[in-house]
Length: 143
Length: 143
DNA sequence: TCCTTATTGAAAAATATTTTCAATAAGGAT
DNA sequence: ATCCTTATTGAAAATATTTTTCAATAAGGA
Image 1 (cartoon, helix red, strand yellow):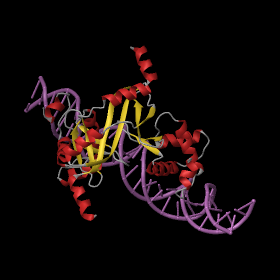
Image 2 (cartoon, helix red, strand yellow):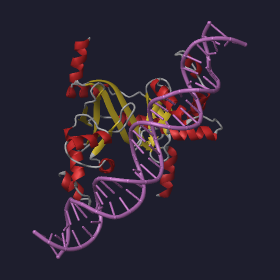
Image 3 (cartoon, chains in turn purple, brown, blue, yellow):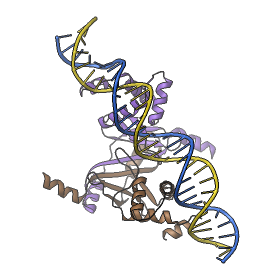
Image 4 (cartoon, protein in one colour):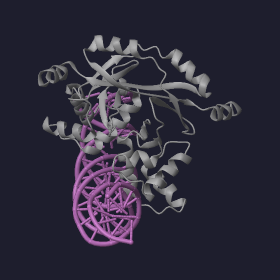
């Protein structure tokens, strides 16, 4: 099911600004802030308003089509979300962001925490960071 | 080692605004935004400036004395961090935030991801959310 | 108690985000 | 193809958030 269908199905429309935003995100290899998305859109000669970027990101995030990546100081990085459960891996150095399938088995940890705290857990946020292959190479050379 | 020592050791000072902020965070059972911290400080008759809240939170976060809790739409919730490795558990309903010791064993997952992606992983963000005991009770009654 | 300087608060500046509203254009219906 | 409904847009204004500047203050070591 493509974007067109996914949106129309819900009475939503695949508009020009939305296409432009998707296109920017598809080409990005890092997460992008609303401002960055807007700028790249303009650079690609897609004249859209910054407001639309905000609105679209909010909508797409709610629909699970886009996800937010959490940084140390800011959490305004957005990336396209492929369907299904997965998490992100971010490079400290170049900010490259990669998605990996959520094959993790946290169930025993979750059960443990539920017992310890009395909470019922139904959601988690998991994100890794480190050095991507390229930046590892660059670091090696410098040393 | 108390706050006084921790700061002085680094040439930093335990000032009135900083004490007020610590005190607010100690009394809180949810994470708090800079604005909320400021307001609660005023409510407690500790007249401090909002700027100091920002500056203190930034400093304390860098020092690992305070941590940021990541929500769905905002990530401006700060909590006191006890020393050592641990994560947070947040109630969807009342926002109660609890810390739990980082007993998780993610090493096999990390190794798996390192192999799959070529990244070197040295950091992770893990946060759970669900319903706290109190809110579970309230939900049960309503149903 | 003195002295150095980290820290503060107020104000201004810079950024970021949200709201409002008339105009537009997506896309289902005809 | 064309019409019609209405979701969506962009511009502007309103709000909110964060950072910077700088003179005054107060921590805390000597």
